[in-house]
Image 1 (cartoon, helix red, strand yellow):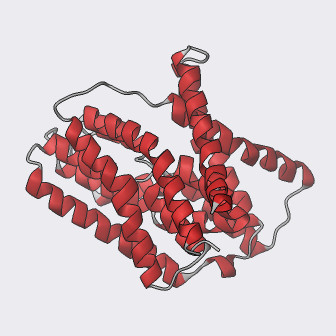
Image 2: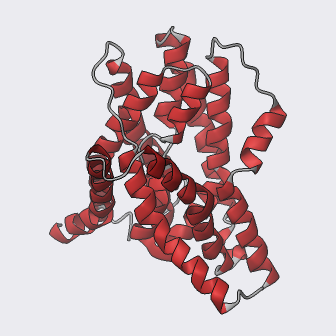
Amino acid sequence: MLYDLIFSLNIVLPLFLLIILGYGLKRFAFFNDGFLRGGNKFVFYIALPVTLFRNLYMSDIGELLDLMFIAFLIGMTLIVFLVIWGLSVIFIKDKKILGAFVQGAFRSNFALLGIPLLFNMAGEAGLARAALIVTFVLPLFNIFSILVLAGCSDSGKKVGPLTIAYTVIKNPLIIGIALGMLASVSGMTLPNIIDHSTSYLANMATPLAVICLGAGIVFKGFDKKFKYAVVASILKVIILPIIFIGAGYAFGFRGYDLAALLVLAGTPSAIVGYAMVVQMGGDEYIAGTVIVISTLASAVTLTLFIYTMRILGLLG
């Protein structure tokens, strides 16, 4: 059991120490807002897409496309979103709070934290599962976030299907995956210079992404709406992982698949969701506070989930 605890800590704590480092560096003005914006942009538009490209380029696409797992991911994501939104409408009457609450409760920070976590847990096999999640679930996060925030906004903004489709298609992570699949299927071989360069970029993705994640955390103090942020965070890092893991186990998924479901459901609320709330007129306090609480709490909850799943033999 001690070995399982150490295994769990070794997966989670290195990444959260980098989050703490990023937070501290920003608070002590080691780097400024310009560096943070540039760093996040570099990670999102270059480093992470290159990481996913390389993983797929070096993989057998036929072995990755598990249709049963893909259908489960899509179905569970849709069900969870609809249930959270449906129940939240009953208890939350303020539309601005409602939109930020629902998005904060279901949208995972998978791109920045989930991908490195899965790699720590399962190596290249974890990245293969991460590629499926990025391809089939992250677009749903974008679509559902737009729908709920537009539906709860008082700004009068209308969002059409073409706008949603364009938002998904232009996502650099999706582009990186598409190019990786094409490279794999075509059987092409990258020149050594390009291969080494992309390898260096991929190696930068995790540390820079997680440091920027920590630097972007801002706590806006306590407010009468704080309770909504707490409830959304509990849903995000405790309730959803239990639901996803339980349903996944019932459907026969084991090992790396369960690890992927845990990371998808158990990672904290996405920082990019804050920007969407601001842009679409939602409650900024709820959006920002959910990110802070869920990020801090997930350091403990993810460790406990991994440890529990290890001792139960669910992760191999």
